[in-house]
Length: 349
Image 1 (cartoon, rainbow, N blue to C red):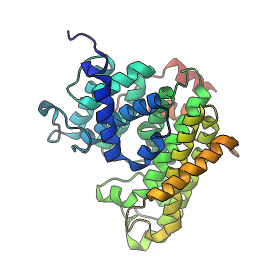
Image 2 (image 1 turned 30 degrees about the vertical axis):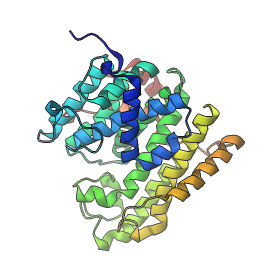
Image 3 (image 1 turned 90 degrees about the vertical axis):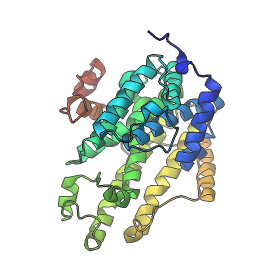
């Protein structure tokens, strides 16, 4: 047996340095917001991001983040095999074992420091498994379950990195809301790119409601209906964003500032999609550097003023989505995970 070694035996400095390279390459928005954190939180958030980026690369058979050892080149294997490799490497890293992939070793480091659990990581990996299975959402709940896996669960991990206790359920719920908001805005922005890749994250029931035939939502004749549908999507994102601000008020000042800056920047993406209406998918909507700085300044004022009570909490909360995730039937690599005690209590609530 290989001895347990935090970070796979690599130095923390090397893990942080390579993780920082991954985030600079992968997300300009998150790079800007993360610079507002204190050093420890920033380093940990970068290591978590590096793992998320690497998982995404492996799932898609790409290498946009960090290059693995030659034997871990999975680009020619099946999507299901790649997801299984992600799960095996993740569990190995969180067990303190070296993985030969620096992004997974970085996860092992941050998991040890922030007490992240394999269940948290598995919730994220289940989102990759859904994509590998060619899954598409039929209902609004299906869409939100997917958003939970790929972003809401990451928000919970980020909250733990920021020192939110494991028993602070309401604050973790608000962190989940922030991730859900991010992903809903991403879906709105990336509809054309997803369609080109053979994917669609818009609920089939929504498309039917707007008389858009399956697989035809990018056709010019349905562009007006798509704009109306996306307004609804972004409105949902804004409700989750408002709820997330409530949780931000419980963080330290620098953490609150960073979270609010990220909320402002990602929220601006969705609002820009709505503003551009029928032209929104002719090119990829993005927020310019100076506009991002404006959102950072606005977040600074919000972090000081401290007034974020939402009009009402969103319908799709973490408790409901956890129960959906645990009770969902197995889908090509997505295990039918039994309900845990916490999930049962949430269902009863």
